[in-house]
Length: 361
Image (cartoon, rainbow, N blue to C red):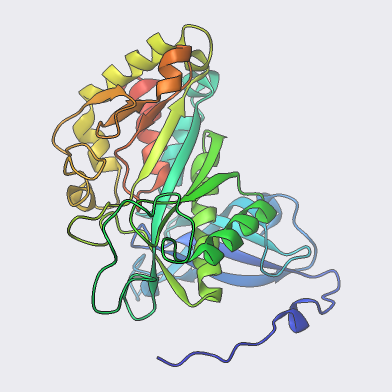
């Protein structure tokens, strides 16, 4: 596979651009997992999403429309600083709408926002924190750092590991962390995961719709950073079969009443509501209605069984885990360990508030 010769882009990115600004429009494509982008010039720096005009793209090339009626609308939703171009340039996360202004099939932000804007949800001040796991691959399709015709040693020394024989791709991780901080993404931390070349970053705590906005932009930044290192980011929930951990997007969740004294009782009430809608949540926790998670939620490798709901204190094999320190404090949050690494965070957070706050059944 041919690659461009490495060039110092700073020679171009530091050129004076006057008052005009580059805004990169970013959206979720028809897969419900991958992202697309394109750039336009604005005459002045936008301060909020509404300062950016709506735009269109060829949805027939992104699995979002037919060729005979291909235009799909981009509506500005969330604005971030651009860590690649710097200066006044921006990244703009967008909603997608069909030609007749109906919501596109993979635009789950709209229904999520509707739930988040209800008075019951707003009054509850739901906080979310998602732990995004991912795996780095070489462009030849092999896992980064793994022997080309074999496997590394068994799992054990890689989680939060240090050393060239234990971690692969730390440069990508560090560059992504700084890019998120610059962009304004609410990144909370990062660590190496159990399988070699598997990593995790955390976003949050974020309230309401911000959780989905910030995680999707964090993913976009990760894809873009990985480009710079000629590395491929894989969000598959079970990228390697066999005795290797899968990848999830554990969702930490609380409401205001859970976070104050006596909150443990409210956490337990929420868990019981989640128990009753286990099947519904499984369909919402990966983009293929639970099919992707079937390969991951086996009851092994720190997962629960996809077929059975369970909960427990400090239990990493449960559907819902109450962290040990939360049980001791008797207030705080719960961790839903079921969402897959390729989940749509809008679907995950919407499902949680509809079940635990809006009491949908």
